[in-house]
Image 1: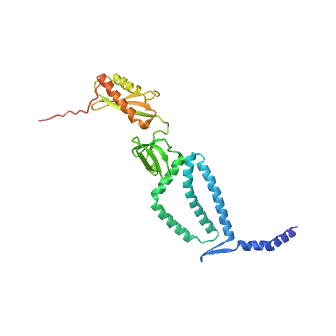
Image 2 (image 1 turned 30 degrees about the horizontal axis):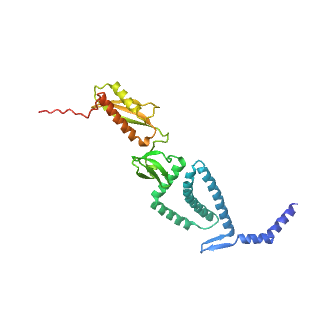
Length: 290
């Protein structure tokens, strides 16, 4: 039985079809004097590219499964660029594994990539930062952010820049790499309401309980101030020229906080005048020695 199997295998090996297949797979295509690739090598390269494509698609689905639909399109653009780089790397590695000398190609590619990287360093930082923003959802459209002393409401998040509008209706273009280099304050990530405050000083000898009552009245009568949580007054310090207080309250729209805060200051000034509470100006005693 074993002998019969051996004879069959020998016949298959010696068959004309098998020999022609081997000859076909062994055919070489020459590219220059140093590069020669067989048909079998081409099949191996195509298989490697096919497997890489499947892996990249799976990775893309895993990364973008939680992204909003509008952000998936932006991410796919960047992912497309990185995909071709990965294809190039896989191609070079596969060529090297089948016996093609690609050391010169590796050296040239490395030098080219270093040159491009140095020339477009800031651009790459912006794009990579944009990808991070899309993935970890640090900033959303509609959020109020403070970055490098500038405050704006986010209108659009692109791969290279974030567009925000300031309270003065000026467009603020923020390069995305600034998110990696600076501390970002997201005013509305925990919700649309924020705690705001107005500081005021009164003259020494003033009735502090009356001051507290008037400050709470100024906040509670303002339509923009939320009743829950209730406004509160903090006695912050015995200043050089005044008793210092801080009125703390909650607003539903912190982006326009300066307007209700201005209204509250007007109301505080009116109430203080009606109740003979004075806001002192800084004073200094000067002693002249003759």
